[in-house]
Image (tube, rainbow, N blue to C red):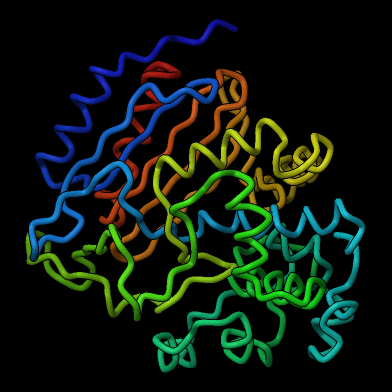
Length: 344
């Protein structure tokens, strides 16, 4: 199939229009075969101080960094230190039996564990204190499973926290150090991490939202709407440039061997008519119009993020925004795919 050469001037005009209408703030990078074709920033990283976004500004990733957690788990599996078929009790024997003896690493990676989310009253009371993987565990450890593991699909942040705990148990290192050593540094992602926001971080975008205010009302910053430090389920920070580096490292098998890269990124539900989720191990895997798209998105109030790797055409789309919802990545994403696939 012959893929179109996307007109970057047309794409830029569309994004500038979105930004002028306050429908986008952030950074956009388009690459093909690892070479950046378009890279530009829009809007303000800090409205109060009038600091503009830059292409190397660090934005909150939301759930995008679930891919990094998955790659770290796959690295351990590739090295024979765990198996995706193992029960989590193999590594976390002190967990309640319902979790330890029923849920596998595979269930956690694919959101089929039944562990649910942790955005509960405990989280609301403690979210400014959450800095380590172990800090998150009490939020959900006593909750019953939502369903028998493997029988349904339900997006689970709790499951990815457990994956972080498994990484720590297997390696004897804290999650953050292991992912930094095995994912960020090998991929040359020098501006990516789960930063502790109690301390100053250079060139970090503040998120802005109108969540909880009337349409057209004042922008609120999201400083008090998310955790102080992200973790295995999301909330780290990165740049569009670093996301391209991750894409390049993944496609060239610098992070995992070809076999293990394929295992991580391939849809696990294509043969199951009851769960057509198009999701692998921490990666979406969508087939559409002759293209295969792998990657992940993420969102919170004041956070909107997307990394799409178009495997057949060779394109990469990285969009990071410090706006949420319809004012985040959606408009840019829709325009890019209209240009790639055509309006039909």
